[in-house]
Image (tube, rainbow, N blue to C red):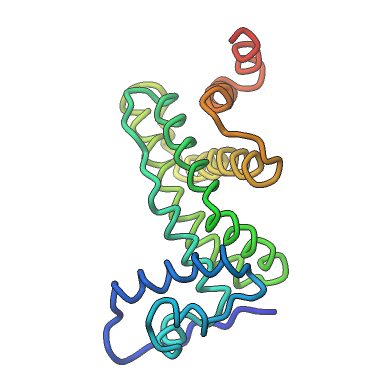
Length: 211
């Protein structure tokens, strides 16, 4: 199954209210019906819009569900807690709280599964979820550099690779812990994870054991 490329849209401007209702209805339908039974017709009924309204905005179910899930992660905010460690702990706890929501679990796991056989869908996930949330890494790193907690990275290519690595480590660990192993992401786990992230395996493991 392959995602269709979004067609050029013309006509009346999009309604933010309608978009919000459609995305909320999509998440509701995911929880109640699951991926396999979710249809655009059902979403349109729940949102109180015509089915053609959905097709003017999204090429199909895959794209719609990605955008519905992406909207949840847009709620993430990097706290300014005075230190890099505290900032990381704050945003990781937020991330875990969102992932624990039924609509986030159902939606994320469904689109990731579909993306294993749909390259276009994988690209949409990267653009709508991954790339959008890398803002948190960039903001946190910049703030830490101003505080003197992290050294500057004058080479743009190196800085970009570092940001990618940090994002992958944080997102990968929390998604695995929450959705795969089903273990709690509580304050104690987040503290230990942050120590390992900031100090490396040797330092983080030693401090975690001491705690």
